[in-house]
Length: 335
Image (cartoon, rainbow, N blue to C red):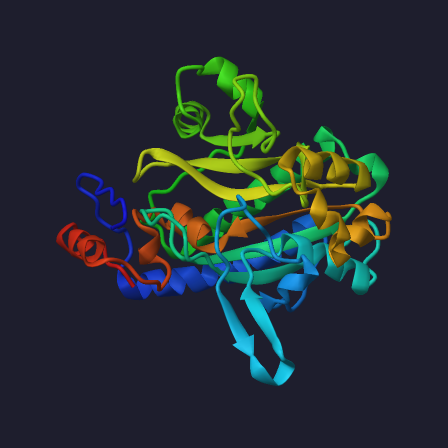
């Protein structure tokens, strides 16, 4: 059974028909604004990959991929968890040059996801990746990129409000940057999610940096696979979500590992055997371009901008009967 939160006195500002139209407008507008802000070109991406390629994202290392056999190809395919590694390989194969990147629609099935108002087994993202120089591998470059993404999201909301004037959503354009260690030092008695909620409620728009490595407490703020983000140059983008009174993560992103940070992180994660996989070998031999990239949740962005209380209001997925009944009784219209 999913963990359902019912906000008191919740009522959607848009009808089902208006919601569908608004979702379409958000997706078209955001894609244009992201491409302009980050110098991206839209490309086509796979929904499944060969597990032997090492291209699938391992997330926290415990999630099971959805797999199926392809008899005519004599192989088994894994539905992607994300395209974090595939995008970097695509930039290499398509010969993108510095300060240019790609944007694609990523559709994934995460069968082991714990379901609640913000999580579904179906994941849809704008996945993007961009070639950078060695000199760009800095916190300042990361912050500049985050600010451009926040501007694209806020500008999308502005255009949406021209069409739907009754939307109550407001967003803060000023990003508060903080590291996961600074957050732990500030709220030592809280869990990572409690820290995120406390800090984001105060600052509204937040980017938490340096996620994946151990904190001073010996715990991690959150899990990260060791072979795409550099744990010293990454982070999560959060907005305060008024209907649910919580921090809503819209994007996980970062400057990607180079050969040095990959070796270090594979060792820390106890995954050194991955060094022999095709993707990892190219990276360790410095044949892949240096990149920055991330995923921006499409359904979560729609939730945020439209002021929705449940992700099922903006995407079609599967839910348990108790969730469907609870939402119906509360006037939350699940697609």
